[in-house]
Each structure stands twice: as structure tokens, then as C-alpha cells.
Image 1 (cartoon, helix red, strand yellow):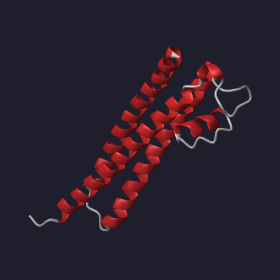
Image 2: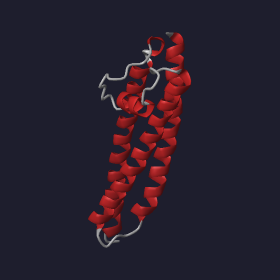
Image 3: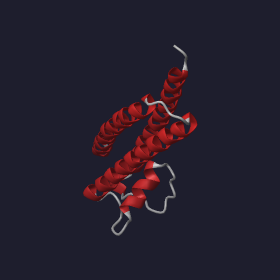
Image 4: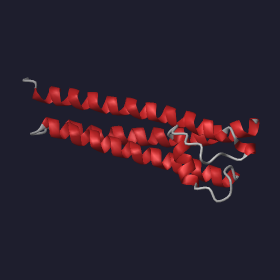
Length: 145
């Protein structure tokens, strides 16, 4: 059981590092977009939010691929299982239960779910911060000096 927790924690730690880098990239890329004056601030805001969400989704997909790779390396799923599907189901907490880890790795599914919940919450906070910063910057650009 301890080895399962260690392996799940290692994958989670790598995903946290990936998410940190994705967060920094989103904030950096969108800072420049928010600094420019826009003729249509609503359209600019929508564009910024769309890009932020897509980059974050790409990050989540990369993190899910990492879980699938871990399942493959550890032989944590039954032979012939679709590991990417299995990783998506666990990470998103969808939990269909049609693919179940082999007995020696039962804790990996819940650990992936715990990691996914944390990363989705983090992404929500990032999206809110991007929204707030963009609106604040747009407001500061239209204030008379």
C-alpha cells in the first residue's frame, strides 16, 4: 500500500509541476493581451478567457496522459485496457467503473481523482484571476487621467 501511495504521489507531484508551468504561461501570455487597449473590450475579454481555458485544458490533457503512462509503466490496469480512457475517467472523477485497476494498484484511481480535483480547482482559480485582472486593466485604460 505504501508503494502505491508513493507512486501516486510522484505522478501527482509531476502534475503539480506541469500545472505550475501552465499557470505561469497563461498568466504571462494573457498579461500582454490585457495590457493593450481594445476597441471592443468585451470581445477582448472573451478572447482572453477562451485562450486561457484552452491552454488550461491542454495542460489537463497532458496531466492525464502522464497518468496513463504511469498506469502503463506500473501495469496498473488489466491487459488490453484503454489506458488513456482509464486515466480520463479517474482524473475527471467520472468513475464509470468499467475499467478497474489490478488489485495491487487499487489506490492509483482514487489518487488520480484527488489530483484531478485539485488541478481543476486550481484552473478555476486561474480563470477567475485572468478574468479579474483583464477587467481591472481594461477599466484602468479607459479612466481619464
